[in-house]
Image (tube, rainbow, N blue to C red; front, side):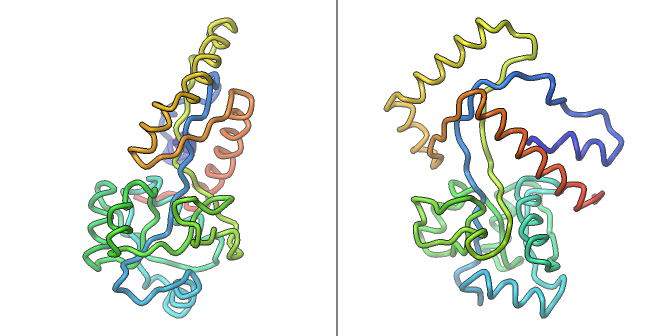
Length: 228
């Protein structure tokens, strides 16, 4: 998670890593979080959630995989953008957080699509919005939060790096090899099987994405502040 050094800073801990320790090679996937609710609950739209949260500050609950987890930070991006207050209920992992939603212990959850695809397909969970800059092919009728007027984006992404100081020749070989690999049908099929469409960015574009992602999420961590 690109924002973890900011979390370490909040707690006066040595940084988990420093960004200047790495050279970017390529971005391989970029899954936005999706906003899901229990299909038996009252919420049909994001407007329903916002209206209820404004009527009952800190009463609408959302689960997460723990403090500063991707599920926590994504939802707080929405909460900040919407100007509302919601109750964060942290669990020890994504599966317990999802089970809490299915069991009616919380009202909503921010989660990568692949994690809850089975429940969405089965109709037990409803998708209300997507934390991305464009609609997802898997949910073409579901709006992005930006479409709805909330400036919130969040991605669970995977990329390849090399240690800082790796020779330019080796970096170039790695970039060329990854570029070739992601074009292979077998790679696309493997990513499809785990519910994560490949999104390729070569080193320069990936570096820009990483820097932007780190800047925005680090600012969000500072907004959340120290919680434990």
